[in-house]
Image (cartoon, rainbow, N blue to C red):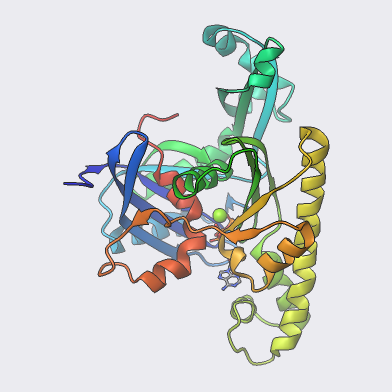
Length: 357
Ligand SMILES: Nc1ncnc2c1ncn2[C@@H]1O[C@H](COP(=O)(O)OP(=O)(O)OP(=O)(O)O)[C@@H](O)[C@H]1O
Ligand SMILES: [Mg+2]
């Protein structure tokens, strides 16, 4: 059987507006894998259940996970989930070259300089990254990820309550990168900015020669549009959401909605610009050659064109299922195309393997 090997792990993205689950069947051979969708589901969450990626209502979230797994008939118990936001710190720095054992010993001490929380309160992970530039100077580059323990346990405990096991915890920005890698040819000598814009956060991950050279999360996203429409037109959250998606809503003239949304898009654009300026000032890179958009807010009409004009760069909405086959009898291709932007993180999480750190 071509797609015989199930990875036995579900990518579970617990976002502030909805929970997404993706399970893949992986075939082919190492370096030439093929991917087929085994299961996929999206379960919306009421507003205020998760705020800025902090879980406020544990029961609501664990019930939503249970419902999603039951409805989609997902039996697999092992889950890879993602965290994001201001309690996750990702830093890249260079060190004198050392052996893996020496690095393991010194990483805590090194990390203290980069992490604004007490080291005892965080889980650390790190990885030496290939850099010929650093090697020429007798140095090595290290990518460090740190997350507050209480943040991680918030996520793992709702998953446990839902009867599943968290076997890998990843960072959303890196899951987006993994989703990009299996679906797109990594361009040589070009800087690619991945922008995943969800409800509460924008995850920015900038790649060069296949590696992440900068990443940052910013607290701006689809909720900013909804809030502005809600306040500007005095609507409920639900009606403002509908108006944002272009649905006809009493009391929300399309032109008024468009004007409000354009202002928010300008704020978003300015935040991206600030980050790009900071990136250019600190990385020595002068250009961004391409922008790949994902997340539900990538669907805001006109946003891709606005960013393309502003940054004078091609902007493409990323399709996380570009190289993933699926049974069209089980999944309507139009439905897949519609929800694809939301599923980028969950697909990237589903690519991780049991036993990964
Ligand atoms: N057609 C649409 N037009 C504009 N916005 C949309 C559309 N469809 C969905 N959205 C918005 O996309 C957002 C959800 O995106 P996504 O699922 O990527 O976020 P999330 O993962 O739940 O949130 P987080 O930012 O916490 O990770 C919501 O703000 C939703 O209103
Ligand atoms: Mg998200």
